[in-house]
Length: 287
Image 1 (cartoon, rainbow, N blue to C red):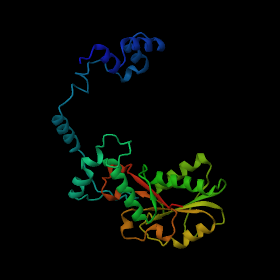
Image 2 (cartoon, rainbow, N blue to C red):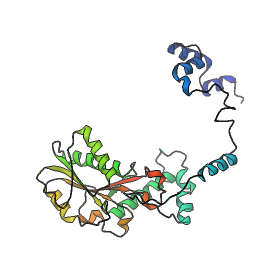
Image 3 (cartoon, one colour):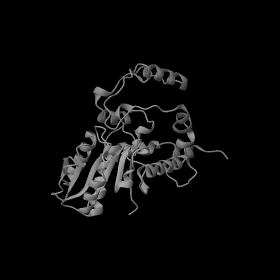
Image 4 (cartoon, rainbow, N blue to C red):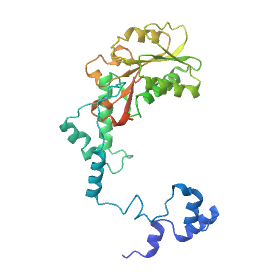
């Protein structure tokens, strides 16, 4: 069966009659006139693409060689900033068989529910790992970064408790970028945010939730069980922002009463990437 030109007209871009109709609706005569009216002349080039910066294009090998040459110009320095992002060594066996394994990132339809697809299997593995390390029952996959996850936990705690006029407590031992994101997200929601020392907070002001860092920004490992009990005694929910690699050794937050656990997965071998974002996690109790 041969395909006539009508098939191509219907399936490969708009037909000329469609283009003319759209241009007429916009009040212009040609596509060039449309571009001239919408894209400032200061950022347009009058040269043909073959002579412009883009050039005529490269073969795959040539493009990879050029990209490698550009990448080699980077100067790699050691970062001492920390604050939730740490350089790490990714063993080659993990790099090749997990991070670079095509079965994990080439599903043909990532939005469908076939369990056999690599993407869904990878997400399930991620969620299972997070749930086990945090000691929680449910985990998502995933969020933008730790600060975003903490802000979502704040909104979640407020929705669950139904407290519209109470504040949200944030330990000053949390990472500064996490505190900043929580404050930014709280402002349009009219949520008062109290930043202070969890050890001296007297709970005089009613709160619907509290956020602490585990370990804290200075590396201190606190036993939050007593603080979590006081949070619960007021009817509030306790969120712990945890270093997921540290949870391989430390007591899981789920075992000292945390209601929500958030954090960043960069610690498990993801390159720093100029500060992220990196996939975050949010785990919680089934209740």
